[in-house]
Figure 1 (cartoon, one colour):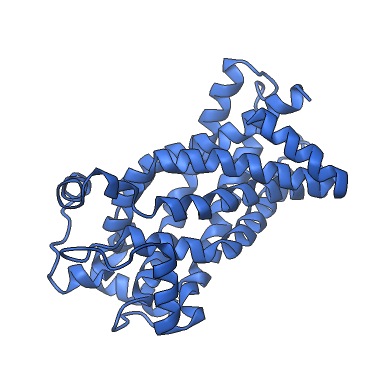
Figure 2: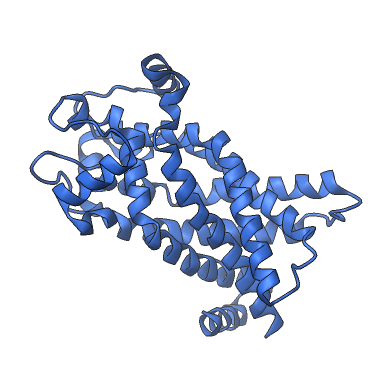
Amino acid sequence: VSVLYWRIKRRVQRTMSSEVGQIVADTALGGAIGGAFKTAAAPVERVKLLLQTMHSNPEIASGRVLPYRGFWDCAQRVLREQGTVAFWRGNTVNVLRYAPQQGTALAVNDSLNRLFPRYDPHSEFWASFAVKLVSGGTAGGIAATVCYPFDFARTRLATDVVAGGRRYRGSWHCLSDTVRRRGMLAIYSGWSATIVGTMVYRAGQLGFFKQMQAMNPHRNDHGWRGVASAAVAGVVARSAITPFTYPFDTVRRRMMLDAGSTERLHKTTSACVRYVYRQRGVAGFYGGFAAEMVRGIGVGLGVAAYDRAKAHLGSTS
């Protein structure tokens, strides 16, 4: 990773400005780390997606597939009915989506933090915190929009539970079939909920993390204290914001799933919100939440790994 990072950075900076070169190198680093953590957490994420969207899944709603009773029931049935490899169904497109999305979000966030005025995190706490929130939210919105079709395909593949087989052969089949039947805009179903949720999520996750790291007395320690404190900051930041952003994630996933259905349940994002609330109340927005909190540990550690990698690479440049 170290060699790759510096080769990319030096090669890009020969033909581009130093700021653009830094963004490209940071994107590559963040993408590589994000892709590795995403692959490791893929089984938990697949179970989370199945639980989160099962009440909008036409196979389950029609009775052809029985609903899942919880995390372990879902995991056991996936293993028994689809095999071990099925836990990574859609992971390839997920990495293709997540690596550039995570890398872009982290890189743009760092770039915006360098462009905004610098405030002392101790004496000017709120100004410093506001800059980090704006940087994180803006970076998240940009990254989510660019990579949205990949996210759409990942959701459809991970929730593919057609009785006796699979509906889609792969990500390209999923996207092309949806566009053919519903039009190009169909692969952006749930975009508005995604942008709002992502901006809040990234603002909170990256903003909290950056602020905690700015106040971390071990942030310049390249030993175990620096690693441990960054890991704690990453997991705490991610866990703190998840309860507020998870309902947005549920709505957008349901909209994505609904886009390829023969008869759509939700024509608009607001209609989806009303439907979920009428059917199951507030709890309907938190299906699979426990699995998401477990998966979020890996996401928080990924952000911390990126921060520590950059700190280490900076010290060896």
